[in-house]
Length: 140
Image (tube, rainbow, N blue to C red; front, side, top):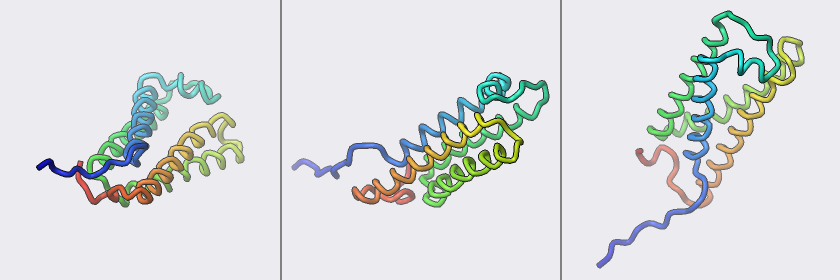
């Protein structure tokens, strides 16, 4: 007698969204540590020889590592929290522009974060709707 396999629902899962966003953070972090002026120039900021751009890139790289941990542990609370924090990025960067602290182009990073957060939220809801196991109910 053949074992009955559970039907797998095709399509994007919340873990796909986190993986894509983690790769984005990894590339941005490594790029920012190795060539911060390239990234700063892309958003209209003046290149600098100060260390702070590289330090910020290190923090972005560390977030990429955190995304790997979130995916491996399937931490429900952290998955939902990533949606909130990515929305905050757009709000804060917009405030930086409105107060004259940053050029308008920097909002592009906030848009990428917010869209990634909305994609993760959509995937969380889709996973629940199609009956996929809830994040945290299975181990990687």
